[in-house]
Length: 513
Image (cartoon, rainbow, N blue to C red; front, top):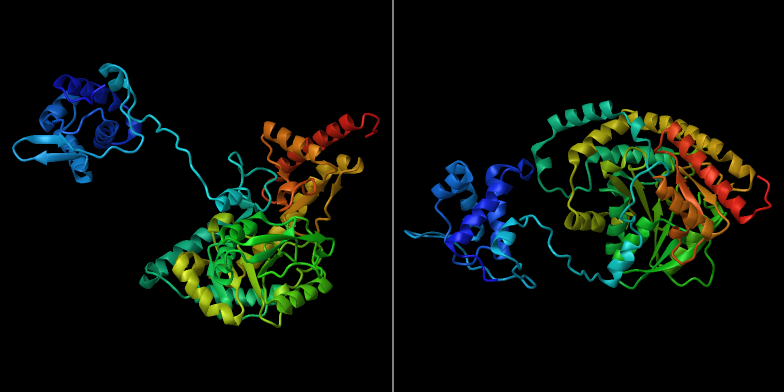
């Protein structure tokens, strides 16, 4: 079929446009006309060189104001889809054809009636091998926050009214220079408030200048990997361990080496290959929940010194311990300047805040600050300033105490819901800290069945086996409880208990539960 160019063809293109312009969901009239003409030009239904009717005629035929038509035509001229010829009129520009583009078949009336907003053809995308591995650490296409989402805090308990007042006040006071590019490493007031808090609560040894404010722990991991490693360098990661850190290291081209975790934490043995980077969660191992013993911590520091490696200490939720004070940070034991301490406000406050921090060894302060300013820029200085007051005024500590009580209650509610299953043999992690429990399962068949049944009932379950770098991994479920109400936990926990009992009875017909 030849491209449309005759007067008759233009007439039924106008008729089709008139029908589309009646749909208010497409935006203002001038935008609807602009999109309709542009898509027909791109599709070849209006051939290069075709002369468009005058703006007056188009306005009359389409029942539009002339200014509306002129606005659409002027935009198309500005973008190169149309061209004006003095004394001759407005014509479709001679555009190069896109690779793979073809004219639709069918009669002119059938073509004109086709929706201009039809979806484009799906194109095959070839990812890099690194990109393919990276997606293995990402949530699936149907993943969404739910009752058992690990790491999700109690958003319903965040003091939003107080936070909004602080934000308004600091926005009003913000100096003009905060609107420009920054390279200070963060608002000084926030780094000072954080320094005081970390020294008192986590036994971190630092000065405010050693704290670099970043947009979450993920950005901290990425910055560290980019600045301190080369592609092909080896990184020790915990097995099982946090997928977010693994994804950042994969993206940097590192070779990941899984180091087993047992009841005392990361187990460093003599035959491990030398690393450049070591990532650990010593205060509350993710996801198993164990705390690294002092002996293991000292052995890890000695191994880092021996190999010339950097330790990335991920202290993601150490504020939430039940029955005892938070464990001192590994960084406080480091005399060799080998530990980079990474913290986040996503778990304590809310993930959308997108703020975290890295406490750097003295030798890395300037390089990391400059690299962060170059790669990611700095921003959110108003938010940082408000957060500094939130911490300095004691609101942060009070919120942590309230959330500690809240999460203790929510964990207890989950244990109550699962109590019949526990009596029948289901094993749960100790839960002395953190925002999740691990339900240890006997086999991968049970793990897969529970996850599949959860999807059917709109209950998301995180399989423990996916936290392992080396398959198949130990089967289990990582059950976040912090972000759901007590009622939601009781309902979903009761469902999980019954499902587990049913699966157990089916696999062991003679079992008495």
